[in-house]
Length: 342
Ligand SMILES: [Zn+2]
Ligand SMILES: [Zn+2]
Image (cartoon, rainbow, N blue to C red; front, side, top):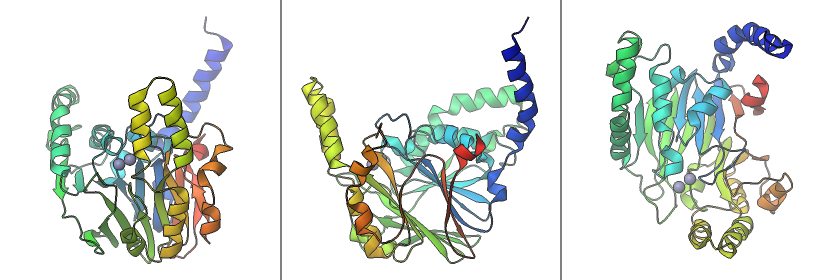
């Protein structure tokens, strides 16, 4: 005999299930540019933040920037249907930005309405990464087509299609996509010794958003982000990261201590991200790629340091699930798609 608790749980889920599977928050968004933070963390394991991934929504289509581990799961928790993914951009090929690529493509492939392979646009290196994922998932595609039939999982669209674009020179922005009123430009940022690394600017119906990718403060980004409505910038806290590095070293974990200390030289700090936003005259700033994890709420202030004083506009620490909406009519609203669904 099932317990009362299990019978109640079953009744509840039966009642809610049709609403859950039919939910399509993207369809409810008004016309405008919408920026959804899917993963606001880094490669460091963080119970609150997934690996980097941002979804930009314009005209009902979803454009994904990077696909860190957990990206497809979080997109699902946010209610963003993988079948709406138009294409995917990669900023660079660090593992935390590509680790979820196979899973995002799989979810899109089997989604209702997908009838083209997923294009993956990136700087030189994108062909090698995409070919590797396509090869690693080749057997899986075969199993699924054999099991469910070609009418449901079409083998012709299962593999991703890489599209390489040239790295823009200093001070340049190259248009990498111009369709359905959306213009996406790429610009080089400074994540050295890692190169190439590009950030992206999205312009749609007079609204704009800039995704910095992984970078230190760079004038290239400031130029590309001129007067943008929303700058999404990476940041780390040198003070907190060095504290973790020292603790690792003192615990005898020399390699971890060294790797963590090395990381401080190729990301901006929050005050530097604020300086970039201020100089670019961005209207709002969302800080993401949070390094290190901040297990206590009080550490957010330590992380930000004097960043809020250095930027005139609103400044937020991004969370997984955050949605920044820039309606065509103007303004900026902020919500969280994961919390809203609970
Ligand atoms: Zn990186
Ligand atoms: Zn990264």
